[in-house]
Length: 129
Image (tube, helix red, strand yellow):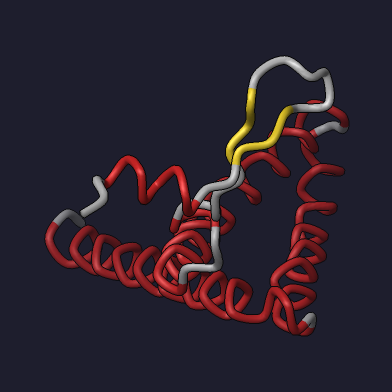
């Protein structure tokens, strides 16, 4: 009977690195380095969430630094040009799954933010005025 270490040594051939110093083992990448479907979905969703929250804020901050208030206000709708990023991700077959989950994260975040905003405005108008 062979031990686990002997099996591992037989399964993973050792070669030397280009400098000829220490042997380097050639093993398959770990599970998170491969295209794991859950990893792609979760990272796409949270990228969409961060995209909706961070990009408009950064865009407004940069416009506020570069231009006066009225010009920055007039230029703010150009933030919609950044929607080309998730659209491009959905179009390209290799990134389609990530792009779809990014779009789902963006829509979900927009719905939650809009719903909470509507609820807070309704409450303030109804009970605080």
